[in-house]
Amino acid sequence: MSADNAPAQVTIVAVGPGDSRMLTLRGREVLEAADVVTGFKTVLDVVTPWTSHAEMCPMNYRNQEEVLEYAVDEARKGRRCVVCCWGDLNVSARELLARVRKRAEIVELVPGISSVQFALARSGIFLEDSLFITLHKRQEVDGDMDELAYYLREDRRHIILLPRPFDLMPPGIAGLLIELGIPEDRPMLIYQRLTLEDEKRWEGTLKQCASSVEEFSDLTIMVFPKRDGGDSGEGA
Image (spheres, rainbow, N blue to C red):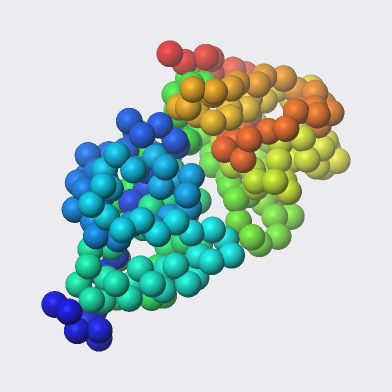
């Protein structure tokens, strides 16, 4: 099928939190069969072992629209097009999915392992006892911060939080929570660059976090265990 007006089929592959060994078998199969592979450069660096026969089209925030236009045009010509993203498609890839779906008639999703799953494993808590909130979006997050503060006061579940890279990172979030009346001694965990060689774990209180001058990675996830402890604890 080579007609330019043919339906464009694109597969979106989630590569996991960073360790290439976390890519699913289905994800590898799709990448090995691909003709065109696009995604942010840091993501493409993870999948290069399986893309030796593909045209690689790295994108950034400035050119992502035109790169996706090119990739989908190639898919319309019959080339097998794959778009890669971090983590799990159902955690923080909403904007990328919307951009692809706006252009392609057929979109296949290949979910991957997320940093949420690893944060749960590292902290020894269970998803059914937890609440997940993400600030990793472009919209205003005042309502999300109010929701976070509400559930911290309620203290019925562990809370998993994705901060927003660069402008709303752990110290800023901790400071806002203190302003919203959450006790300064509230314990918390921070995981950075999960599954990578330089993975880091930080443990302390809201006050300690708010006053931290550490430069946190944009691959960061925050955990607020229930104060009664539950099953929380350092996992294997």
